Length: 639
Image 1 (cartoon, rainbow, N blue to C red):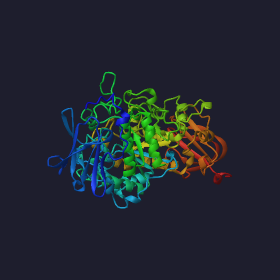
Image 2: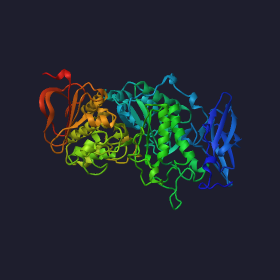
Image 3: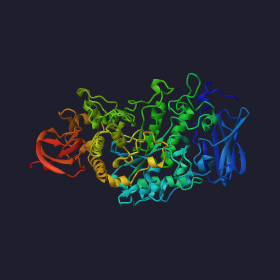
Image 4: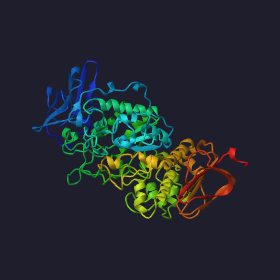
């Protein structure tokens, strides 16, 4: 029977069951697949992951709502498989999208029950709990970048198990790896794609890609496993999560539901031609992703697949959050339903994404999840307004606030208050509460912040650029919202000016752990900022009413920003906190709200929670190209 995707009765063909792919009971293995156009379906069993030694084949029976099913005996467990599907006299052998385990380079599916593969005490593993996403400090990291360097001191280079090595150091004895993450004080690692992706050779440690080329969405990537042919990737992924959790570090997955790596040959297109993808007016594959296709997330079975796979990672692998790549290409209803389902299972889950696409998506305007769509949804979006204000454009020579561009005070204030807006002061935003904004200065895309400063300020010496970098970090960590940094930012990460290093290899992308030694003072400064934020809830307010009430703007000199956070904001132990940003190349005087005793905890050289200097005055001098944070508390008054 021939199906036209545009004429199919989607309600009649929708399958709501949770048993697609393999399901296991004590005595049998059941398999079900969804393919309404199929005429015949077989499952071929192999003893090897190259599909060279076929040991059995089974025919599936047609079942309800476009599905096909078969009951198998338990003795096939541990073998490999492929699906063979016939329609319109064409037979295709492939691996289905509901696969939970695969062999080397994803040539075959692996018949294994993931729930039976886990490290010791896995059942006691607990996800990281948060009162609000604003309590998080997110650290964006690529698995291979983390440990592959010879300077890392890590034995399991480029592997999931690198995250389980507890006491590693670089050549000079400074902490690296997991110990470094704990020392820095971050709360969550955001892992660049760790589902199975296409363009890395599982057997070649030097093969490199960021991973935004999805292949099988419910399978951990094999190139990061010790043995990609078997269930090692499942075991080691869970062990990685468990060890990170034991150090109070959550795990966020970068997910790519806007496109697939393959198009005509993808398993989705084989199952039901043209159903899972969008098309333009000329009948060609739509391309909101910019790489050749665009997933039709609004179709019921694709929406189900997306939500099912997210829930699978949350349940099976204990994932703490999800970041959506090109989130605006996924329809709003799917995003909202996914968030609702995930939130029901984990109050502390963090969900955020890019509120844009590469090219316009084939969706109606009301279907697009854009900046502002997140209001009141417990979903956050990347704040590119704040990013561009801080540093200028991503890859060009345009300057931002930290490089001395003038007339940006208003935009900085908008970011400082978590983009909740303050119309009475002509400040506008796109959030309903501060937890909806991801505040960042750089990410894996584009130039690193350090490289951007070199490119946009070619005449500035390194000392000057280090000051600019510190100022950017101080702005991020003293602003309301959710702070996000790229791995290595704490020791001035460079990719040698490569603005799109997705396949540039290990030398460019690896974390250069020797830089922690070279720039240890800078590392300690960032660590201090994180410590300040983590211990002082004044920087982590949530609702806009409190933010508008407690943050007071100081009349400050031209091209500077000053504000104080008043009255033990958000239960903070400090009565008043004053923050100043001075991007000018000269000392600048700020007037304080009143004459009293103040303690400096952040200046141009140090950052933290302990007083650097105590003074009694109603004014303060802030060094060039720096931030300053001071506080006044009951214990300091009366001096």
